[in-house]
Image (cartoon, rainbow, N blue to C red; front, side, top):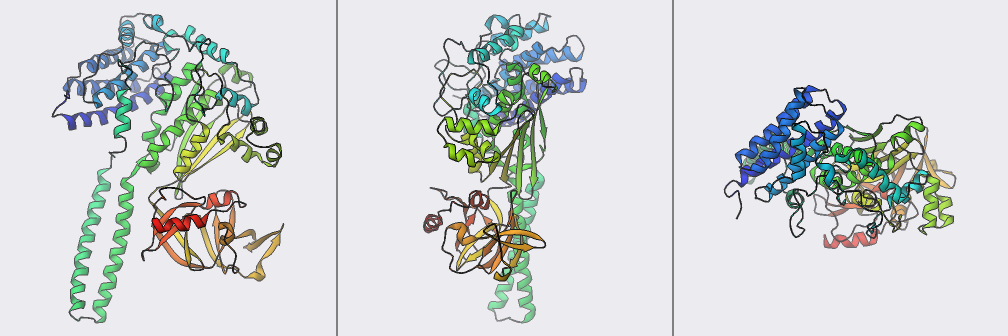
Length: 637
């Protein structure tokens, strides 16, 4: 029976607020480590723990109260100047916040939390009594995974050490040396060799041995973490919406109701034979008003699905800090554009790819402090995570100032592994060469360290991004760093489109890519390098027939052109005619997704139309989309 019978709603409210509060505390702790004398940060963190403790006390969660109380006392002594914030003390605090989060997971299962890890409690008590941090934890600090008994890498997971050597042009340290490096950090900082949850917090990662012994969520019989079960069970069921947005939806609903009443009255008048110009004009106005209100309501409802991406970003500084500390690196994760809003479903699906890219940047993207110093760089590495809106797309940027990647060595490694031939490698430019790291199998089965080779592979990262109708691009320069650019649609539900015709068959093009519509006169077509081009206001643009792009026979030369512009190129798309514009409600094809098809939509007349993915169609003009299969699929939509 639940320990919280009759208090379920109260408990869920507490957990939602407490999770947000603890994420904010985590970020402030990362900031505090850089500015240990900032009293405002200390006060904010103290209040955060005090608030969580108060809620836990109301719920009679005594073990959570105990852990929060000890941590709160520690911060009280820090803000009063009685203790000095050292890296070792910060590791104890981080372990305490990890314990609090684990207890939240147990509360999510409607049971009272078990006692916190005894080593964490002992370390907190020791710090409060003036003991040197680490006195209790050092005994239990487990060494890094023994070199004599290396873990086997799961098939398909990348060997990041080998990938690192391939893309940077430098031989990475051997596996034994990687472990020795972790052990060196452990010897210097007993408490912090592997901060509690440093790896366990990451998606798909194998948990590093806890320096504080048993974790609070470990259960007899190997039961999974309650926090993990709670997250998987409830993450898609709720959403936090600003009340002002709900007020707008309510107001628009009321306006639509009034307009509906007006239309009902006009309908009665017309049925009664009142067909004068005044009545018809009033009907036209009411229909126009309804069209405007429905459009506004649709946009307002969509906005209720939009969430600031900062809610996703807020957990990454802690992850980057813990991993960097474990590896003996000095890394700062800089966040930007946290207020950018993204569809909630995309936020959930972006979590794992972003965690992987950030961990990879910290693990292999940036160098050790002494390496950076020898290369004339600051010892502190910078990893930047940025979000911004560009038109109807969201752009995410993950950049580091590390070693960068060598396109030449990536090509050589792909050839060595038999992923591409020597001839194919010679035809690849730098961008295409960098993209080889996304190929499945761009890794080997070998031993791994406790950090490398444990997440999703880069091929899975790309696959997850493509599932969101997005794209990922790499830019890198050896010695200067790497940049991963992810482009995503603003929402997965509604897309403004231009409807074009090939014969009688309509297709939908994303309106964001359309710059202009113009007639095509064959007399103005010129051949440049064997390709048809058209000069538009002094700019020479290639002309690409939509029929040829789709692999259809060209029955007649296109009469019209759509001036389209993507991030990579500008061109004229040749079509037969147009059927107007529409706001497409995107529906995916359930069983398969043909190349070049983003989804389908239904027109006002009930006709089902394919929405074309222009970036995918243009990626390689030599490969045609299987439009025949796509068109056949429409019969079953």
